[in-house]
Image 1 (cartoon, rainbow, N blue to C red):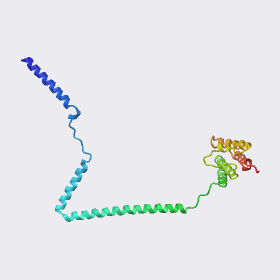
Image 2: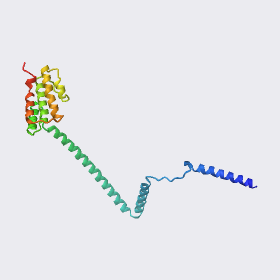
Image 3: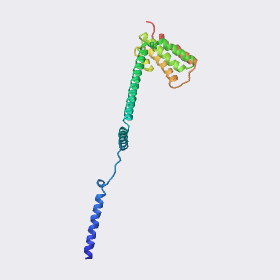
Image 4: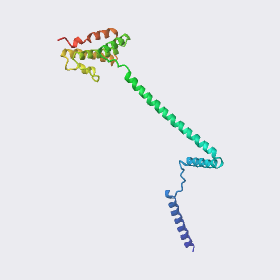
Length: 209
């Protein structure tokens, strides 16, 4: 009898263990998920209930509140239309101002010559050297010796096949000195700048025919 009771108890324990393992799986876990819009729904419901009570108690107040909300909506739409009109009008004025603005002064050889003089007068000799080199290139372009293009580097101008061999050699020396002062930060004073500038004359690279 005792053996039978032990077997029955063992079966009960096994069954309980199996049931516990089954109900411990995620499928049998009871979780209460929070509604992310629950507060808004409760607020909307409370507002509706309050409006129903107010409508039953004081219909005139409900009508007054309705007209007040309509007036607020009209004001919002009117303000939005006014802002849009101001934006469009301001854009049109900006376009007219752009069209009516004076033309930008072209950066020709004379402009770069003046810029080089201004920079050298301020003691910025390396920057003046770069401006004066562009003046030289534009003058050579006007004489059809070189073809100026903003994307070309000074070294490319110095290798231009349109120059004579002596011209390419002289221009390479000019560019090498400019690179040393403008990019390698080699010190440059006024005397050195004036000596360099004396070599940056168009006649040296475009002799008269």
